[in-house]
Image (cartoon, rainbow, N blue to C red; front, side):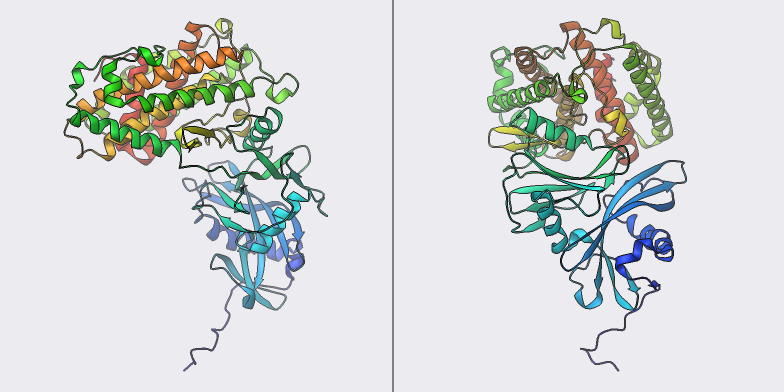
Length: 544
């Protein structure tokens, strides 16, 4: 019988003749690492984006080595291939820790390298590696491996490493807080191109001095031939009270509570047309009495920051990637091809998931299917010759969750773009109103999420709450739109004439709602009623 203090015998099926320093040059190590070790590890990670596909094989596309005084680390660039005939690229920094040195429970696999027992671990869990990344960045140190480029931002004045810790739970990327002042976002899924988050963050804050986005402080890129690949982005840590999504949920809950406490008769609430521009003094007193003035003031502020972001993104005439451009036939072909494919995809998903729907959602789904030709026609009716505004680089995935609340103000962040889009599509210049439409869809979601999450709290039928929600939504949109257009025009942002603005908003909201429909049907069919309601509203269908 073993004594309690006797260490358990080390056991691993992965035994290699190579040492760690030369591991990635050893064919036997590479073969087992990609086929046996990684395949079982990567599919369990939150940042792995291929969970709905069937993994075929993993290849090490490239790697680089960086070393501290005590350890060698590898930055590994992976190509993950799927049986559905597509691939994704991922970045993994990897360390080897001898068995007696292991100080983390997050291990990839137990291995023996050249007689040394130990573990492969994600290097981000080693403080020595985090410190190395930070120090190399602030020193802008040329790497011995010329592929790796550490860049220090113009406003970065830090001279030493003090501390590092993980920020929240790991999502699609991994964020680390350094010195309690900076956030480094490590991109897990990478693209053979610079990441839009890096490009736009650096452009907005270094070149255009936009003050309502976290300042660019540095980055890590790796060069594999023609293009740089962004591995990490560092920004200032912005003091905040959470994101605008939670803020809006709290506001909507308060507003729906007021229905009862203020004895408001929903059918008697004054209504307004969608996209009617409204100054605050044009919002009826019954609506102000119900919802409160403060929420409309915040909607105004958010509209102002959104317009200022677009003015900054559309003001450069020197940097080609950010120079505004007009509409043309090439853009129209790109847009129609993209949306026709997406629309057909959503139709297929809806038809295959119709059995999961009931009540209003089922009625709206059938209405959508009955009107599919009209909806498709609207997508195909994009006539570039009628567009007089400009296209610019935009946020691309703009919603309340991408906005931080800071006192009475807002900070805009996360410019990586729409997750379903290719890296090329994310960099296409688009109407700035596409971001505005994304925010309007987010308002709609916050209102309906409040109704769904508190169905037993408000003493009203769901249909009545939906009616109140639609009224509230149209006033949010009206107040936002008036402020956004005023600020945009003052800043010489050319968003087009009035009819063009209304057409683009309708077009982009419909596109966004159709995009959302696929997500909801695949992940939470009960919520499909939200995009379906948005589609019915924008198309002017009679209420189901």
